[in-house]
Image (cartoon, rainbow, N blue to C red; front, top):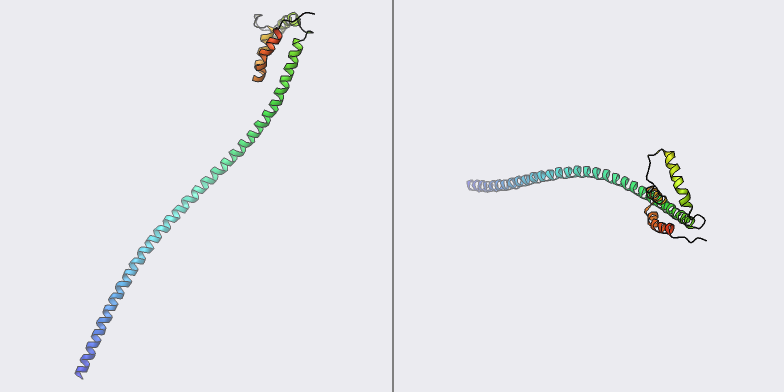
Length: 181
């Protein structure tokens, strides 16, 4: 019986050593798993914090970009409205210029006609003198107030480049020698 007890004891001691070894192995495996999980948790927490920071930055950028876009859209609509208004005004001015050219052409035809030839020399100096007297201006030399230069000054002040382009032609037409009938 003693041998039997010793054999049982040896068997139990082996089982205990084996169980102790398995426990230590399991303890080490679980300890390594805990360390790995804690490391993974720390990495995921840091990544989550970085993502939250990036999301906050992106929201701020979105607000800034949205405000800038709204301002740009307002400027665009203002520019388009101004452009349309200017285009409309340009078209109206083109019609007005066309009418002015027709009026100047008619005036030039009248001035170059035989019915008024020679009347400028007779009436214009008197008209200029009375106009100057009415304005109470200081005396002006007559060569500066001649009919043609006065007309040119008025035209330069009031009319566009298109009409100024016609002035040399008009000057030639006015100074052409006229045949007396």
